[in-house]
Length: 322
Image (cartoon, rainbow, N blue to C red; front, side, top):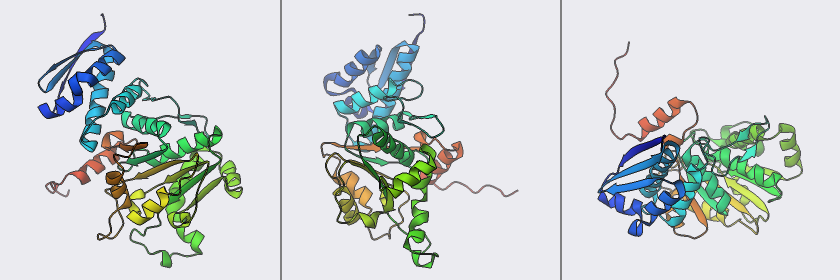
């Protein structure tokens, strides 16, 4: 093959290799057959031979599977199939192509392999939990997916909620009525909607109760059918609030929960409902749990370095002040 190339992937240890390759090398064979590459495993090293594009896709596939393994502690055939679909998306990390068409006319697409797994999970599960740092597109892609469901007639209503947890300020000291007080907490959801849809159409949909943006507390006692329901900043919901939210799901409904476990504003004595749900629901069939990391950050590149610095437990030496 004139464009043939060889790539080598060094794994952490033999135990990682055994899980990554699958029972009797099942996962190796699946990736080999799907991508048309030759795979040679020697201990904790994996050699990938094949056409340049296919070898690059195979390397990306194994890196994504390593990320899934680190977060979940295991791999399933579904994980392998999902990752293969993602890397087959090409350089735009398509994983099924465009999520939706934005108001500007641009197509909203996943821009990293991790985002591709997230979009694929939303397409194949009725309930998805996405955990990741700031700037990874958790909220934006969820809102885009919800809008595509509404436009396609798959749901009749969008419900976007956030816990109104105080991060330093007190709601009581903010001016205005309750709607004005909670508006700052809901602003990111408005911004995402107005970027994806015509602001005038968003206003009409809200007036007609097709789109609802509300604090999490407003969900109590409701059952939502034929709806796409998104809870943003899920790390700031308590365990009881998260259970209440998840059980609002009615017939023909989709639910997405997003959050960043490193930015919890709850009192230290209160367990985050998002952390609890990730642990409690990880084995429940029909629920997709996706982890994103700093490699999926699509904001200013400096954001990725900031996130990494805060995750580093070792304090850095002080820099001299000029």
